[in-house]
Length: 102
Image 1 (cartoon, helix red, strand yellow):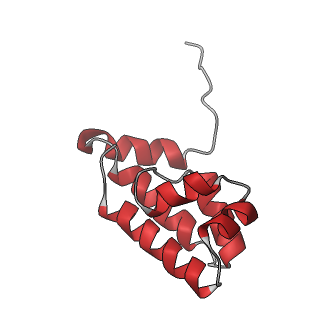
Image 2: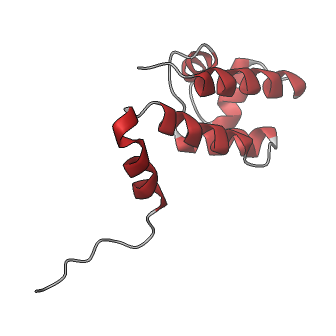
């Protein structure tokens, strides 16, 4: 996995927010309904957080969408450069593809 500065940023913000709430990794993991091993790997940048993980962090740590915003940047940063624009377009698409008849 390519490591990005946003991945480092997510990990640092998670550690700071967790500490501010007086939570251990195990306590946070339990509150998130994820394993302690996953929380540890996200904090050490060994695993990229999923969107669900980020949203749960926002809820548990009361961060008003901070982790979701950072996670979306991580996803964009780790895509090969020539595909970044298309990945963003695909992510923002809200209407399902409809085959047209000629």
